[in-house]
Length: 501
Image (tube, rainbow, N blue to C red; front, side):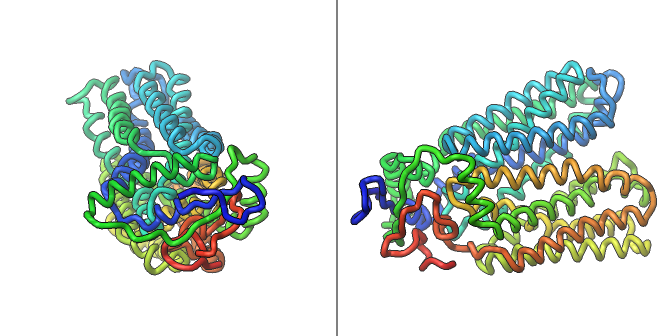
């Protein structure tokens, strides 16, 4: 509970055990509600990106109802979506830290729903491009608001696996987008100017379902007590405890400690920047390395995926979607099967090993491809193995930046590193890899693979040196809030044991 700190110099400090009470909760239906209400947005992102890539050819055809070329869809529209995601992450990330997680994750979903619905109604290229930007704007905001809320509501001993699986669910959306496009673009079922619109309409329907669940997701009690709403935080946690005790038919164990803070209504951007880059410079380097490394590895493969199959292995353009579905499944299985190890073996071991393994395996794939030892099936199998590890690593990048900085900076830190990684993938990626993988020269594609593999490997080495041992630890133990006044005699707010440096 929250109360004035004993022995404090003034009456502006409050001691609270809210973080410890949240971290010692057993897994329950309440946590499933959070995962479904917040985590499923990544499925929408995967659906969006895959659908646009798959409908590019149809939109460029006569009778589609939209006078655009395939190059404009994969070029201008894709770049605007990326730019919108970067801008939305930064804009909504700042608002999320200032005004709360719940308020913003409702707003960002509303932005996404509105923009996607308007995209389905596109009648001119400028309209389509405008709402692709705004769709990305909403999705980018979702990343900041959702990741911060999830990490603050999920118990510390489950945080790693839950975060990884949720971020990896992007690939479920990618699989769904591929299969949906096959049906919606079938002119025997839907007219050419209707089918592609239905793909976006389905995104709206899924978003509305998520909205119905999300309206029951509460504000983060951690955000509430930091911002002077201790009574609200206390009431919310007490209600959740009673619900879980009734569900489990048992009493909860006592919390493991308290933290003393000075509640603040807002914290300036300058304070946030100084905290992230001056107080935690090694962690900032770690975050940048992880995001840039995974962005370049993914773009080394995905920007040339279709061209490599059609140019070097004579796969029909109409069949590449099946290969993509297989690769997407491998991407999802990585976080799903490896996620638990991030909470047991630990962050440093798993982050560094997934990055290093995926980088080294891509080097191996490049060598086999250069020798002419691969066909379409074995190339796809190699990609699946590489991305099985890379997907877990990429998901751990989001986990890392969401838990290694103070609570007041969390959403903004996620937004900043996400924007850097997304820009690297969406801007530098096409410039570096597009021409290489389209040239038809084996050596150019090998070079693209090696660039992505080298940066991923380098990020893995950075993780070996700088990764933070965050497994099983309270967020307040990993990085004390800016508003923290002192620790109680009980130690950290973690229910898992004493504080560690």
